[in-house]
Length: 168
Image 1 (cartoon, rainbow, N blue to C red):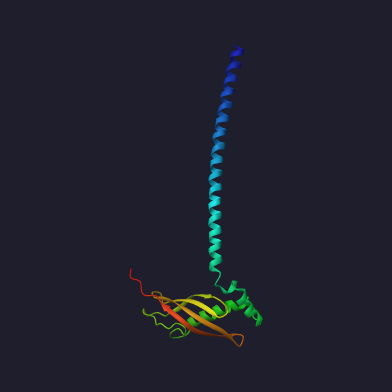
Image 2: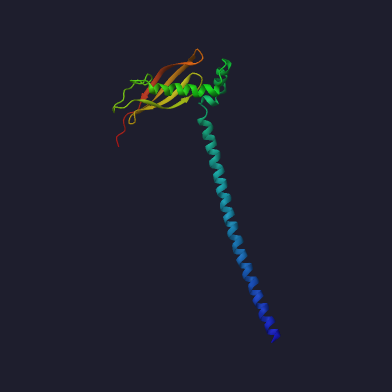
């Protein structure tokens, strides 16, 4: 009787060990599969990041903040570029507050609003691109600028374009 109990106990323990082994193996394989999937995603994300990084570098090319030659042009004249760049943008946006039609936008609003400059990009120490709209119609401006008397800006519209209305 005693030997039968030990035999049953041995078989029970053996079954328990086999069950634990199979269960652990399945858990291990599951974790390994998840790890492989995560590694593949990480590689794909790294590729995406590199692609986006390259795209950002391309977009930064025509930008005053990243143009060392243009920045040194201002620095040679004694300007602090960290203050000058926001000053130039603010001066353009201040023109939106002028009574009547906008002084830089050669188009009148066609829906009883006002044409206003929405977005400004300083390309270098002489050129600006600006986007304008009245809420329905929009276009772009190419503007040159120069600094007169250290704190006064003089803008000159070189070219403008208004997009044709879209019919939906």
